[in-house]
Every structure is written in structure tokens, then in C-alpha cells.
Length: 102
Image 1: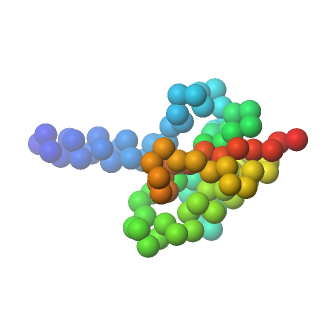
Image 2 (image 1 turned 45 degrees about the vertical axis):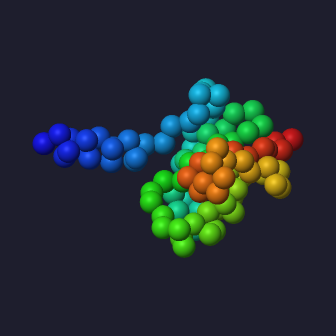
């Protein structure tokens, strides 16, 4: 029973998207880009993009570009080229972008 409870709890957490502490107070938007779901947190001149759902390695190739499109679509700002950062190199789950909202 403990294993089942742990599995259910893990699945519920995986379905949630929450921002990093320094993005608290930012605006949250959900967007779909090329059939993939993203949650975007926007605060000042930054956007944090969270990819929803599991993808295998081969399916992740287009995700960085889709994350940039999600940031632009959700914020109405221009994503600064080359500004994408991740906490783990190559991570396609969460990324940050600098924005030009002027």
C-alpha cells in the first residue's frame, strides 16, 4: 500500500508546474506550442518555461526552440537570442530566457 501511495503522490507532483522562488509573484500562463504544453512564468524581463509531460530523448530535440516560442507567446516580448539557461545542462524540462519587452 505504501508503494501505491508513493506512486500516486509522485504522479501528482509531476503534473504540477511551479516557479522557482525568485519568480514568485510573476504572471503564470499556459500555452501550447506545436502540440506541446508549457507553463510560462513571467516577471520583469525574464521568463521561466516549464515543459509539461514526459518526452523520450529523441522527442526532446525541438524543445528548446519550442520553449523560446512559448516564452514569446505567453509574454508578448521578444526572447533575446542565446539567453536560454537551464539548471542542468541539456535539461528540456525547465529553462529561463531573458526578454526584451520594450
